Image (cartoon, rainbow, N blue to C red; front, side):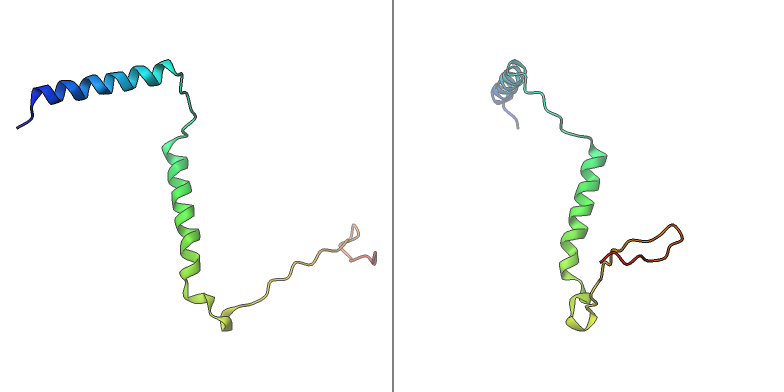
Length: 80
């Protein structure tokens, strides 16, 4: 089954590792699990976008962003 000598050695090594980390003051902001899960889901969804069937050339539609000045009434102005 499990050797108790090996168990003692593993516990001793784990204690040494714990003491080493505590002595180096290795404090980090690891974040919480919810933000990590959100990041993982978003990353997976963005990676899957490149494999969608809508990437065929016939489905591509250009998107235009038009910026212009308007008056207080909402009428466009002619400011070149």
